[in-house]
Length: 315
Ligand code: PMP
Image 1: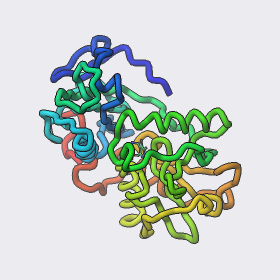
Image 2 (image 1 turned 180 degrees about the vertical axis):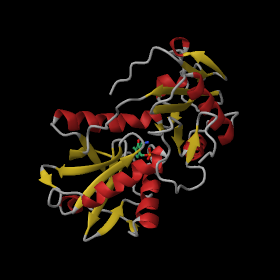
Image 3 (image 1 turned 180 degrees about the horizontal axis):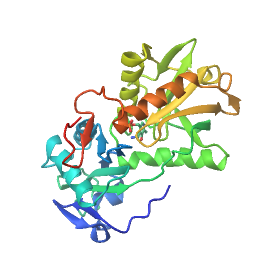
Image 4 (image 1 turned 120 degrees about the vertical axis):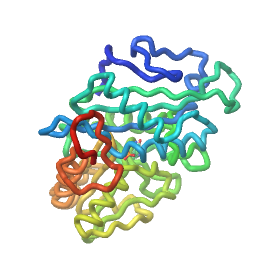
């Protein structure tokens, strides 16, 4: 999963710079304290035309600005500016395959003082991405012994770099115990989310997911999945508190997120989920890929941003 990145350009301090020169000083507040917010965005190459679509680009930058608000980061860029900077970067890097974009808004002051002072910057990295989780279609996970960071400690709603220590601890523990990933509970013991993805369960034919007040990141894929289930598959989604033992008694469980996409969870804490099959998740996964790749015609406005010119109809 470690990306080797030697070529290409990044966006930093207001301009494109070669990646090898895209340095940040060790005295930077964001490096000293984790005071940055970020997004993970995927680009998908259409199987026939070779067009690359950035998925829900505007929505990612809207969320980035919300995160910035929490961390008192103010950027001189609008959502539209950042969308343009991103498509230009993907073009300059000559990317015509699946790719991953990581914008990071960070506290750029060189200072030991903790205060969130106003010296802010935006960095963007865009790299080709051949495989990333794609070979994993059913995961064996544990309930983490680490609890999800609470809204009143470090809000999970804002995608704060430093908060990913919480996810890194849970992921490392899960891997060391022989699992593929982990599910967090909230401090109160309700199901929250995965290390880098949201979680859904199917119980009694109903699809449920933790609500936005359960210390989750309000995932864009979560929203996409709710759209596909409700609008295209006729299945209503309930956002509500979920108990740990509902994981043990669910018919199907799945993770969703930009990186993870839509992946079935086959085992939780050594218990096989349902009868070991995931018909709903399999159907949903198919629809998800048709949507993001541009194969499905029907798509809400603004969800697919084409990167390269000369393709006619922007979707
Ligand atoms: N929860 C966490 C903790 C995440 O890091 C992510 C990935 N960004 C998600 C959920 C899923 O969010 P999205 O679908 O917007 O990528």
